[in-house]
Image 1 (tube, helix red, strand yellow):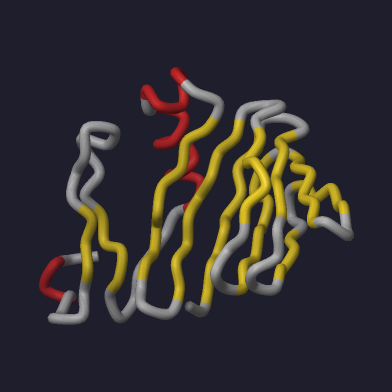
Image 2 (cartoon, helix red, strand yellow):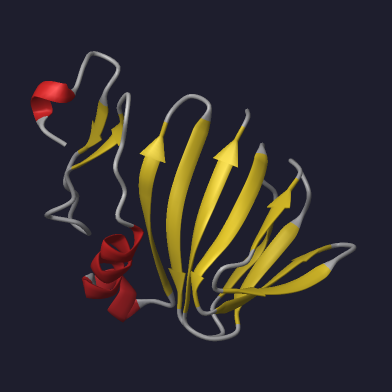
Length: 137
């Protein structure tokens, strides 16, 4: 997206040590996102090589945040709560998603939605990438 198309409501992300090439638009009237290019970016970063996970925020507004998360096989997001409604869409791989009452396995092309403030955990059954969308407070 060309900078001339941005307005005062636009928000961009500055480069960081983890992402020296990390400048990208996070919020604008229209934000284009190439998820598979972001997956390749995650895989190319030292954080991916040095730990069991890596992620990148690809959209952030007052109402919604979208984060692309990559987990190596057997990596786990320990039990936690989200202060809003979430959806999880698997783009590659297979994950185990569980709450205190339910357990599901989801893989490429599948997704789940979860109401706010429910304790949950995520485990990668193989190398996986998923799009997490958080809405609400």
